[in-house]
Length: 96
Length: 476
Image 1 (tube, rainbow over the protein chains, first blue to last red):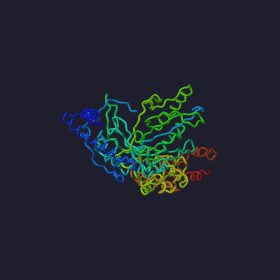
Image 2 (cartoon, rainbow over the protein chains, first blue to last red):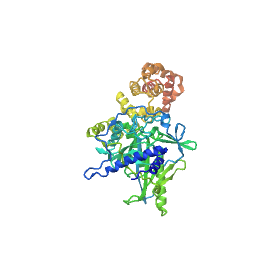
Image 3 (cartoon, rainbow over the protein chains, first blue to last red):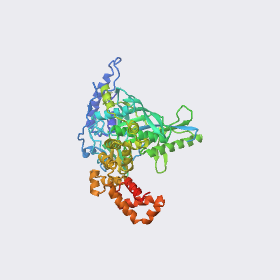
Image 4 (cartoon, chains in turn orange, blue):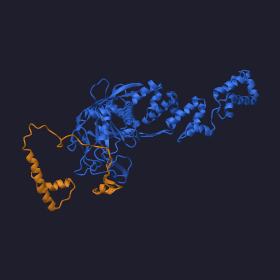
């Protein structure tokens, strides 16, 4: 997969991220290296390895049902494009 | 419904589990907090935040599955259900898909005096989405307090045949969940929600008809009415030579009819795939055995036991097991007093009038000990039945023992023969004409004399002794 600046811009747009030219250049080379590494994995012969959906070893860690403080409302809403009535304001939609 | 077609109904129930914290993070699940104050990086769906499973949610979900006679799968998997919606910040809901932790259960329901076994397809765990507020101007407002609250989803087989059966199935399931302490049964606040799949087919036909999904119906009455309306609608379509379209419909209580929300063409492909952030869910035999032990007595068994061992009527048993707190109250009072039948009658006729329930909470106006003590005073002849009711009225929402109230109100039943005879003599002397008529055989006047004596004694005279005294002194 070719990882050029146009692709980085496209992904940034999908993720609602605005990047400066310098950031776009940096991510182009960093993401190209990451994707290149993942592609390298494809060269491994996994014929005899059973498929798995997770990479964690051992059993799931469960937590006790104990309260812990989360984020303040200001923090929660800090990234919201628009805030009204202490919530995320979005265009009106119909519940389906 | 005509005799040509039969309805086929399967229900999916989503019930919020009564854990303190959310399914995959440590935020509070308390209802009614100000918007977006019970949210953290995980339930906000921030990149890099990882889900960690709440052990109590697993325990509650497993108890639910066991109570519904499901088979438990020792290894199961969480899956991502992908859809794009403002109230779903991650863009997917963590659910279970092809490997739920339990399946193949059943539940017995009572409909019109008959019992019916409804099969349960599966019980699985998932997380709730946020809540959308639509009544705030021209925007919809998203509150993520509910995002990540643990749900148990109970999927039923299409074994139900009418709106009445569907409503009964839901009532029974709600009782089971409340008895387990898994869910508060609160339909209004949306902690117990139901979707219904409804189709009709010709009687005798094996193949299922095209199904319509009825979404988000928030009362048992609307479930019944919505399904009945939908059956009629589909029957009208087929009778007119048309075909039922596969779609999702909503129930409009104002018009008493269903309306199309989404057709099959717009049906969503949820692109399920295994949740890579959570390893397999492994339920050990030991864990399952412990949950099985804590299932306890279910409402149906309790009703049967009340009838068989406490000798109360089936209808009284039904009423007294309608809420877990009421059942506990009744049993305690019955144990303290000893005569379950009398306790059952008194609770039904007096106490339940003042009880309000909200979810798992029941506001009982008196204690079981007060009721038992009050009925004992009647047994001992200290109070008449009528006086007991008066004392009960004064006892409500106080912690006063009935004996204290009897003394305070001077209500002691008069069981002193001489005192009663004195009152009776006075009444006879004051009503010579009536006494003469009664002696002459006009027995209808006997009640008049009883009434007069009771009036004189303000209802405190022992009724049996009044009858005896009147008969002796009037020589009738």
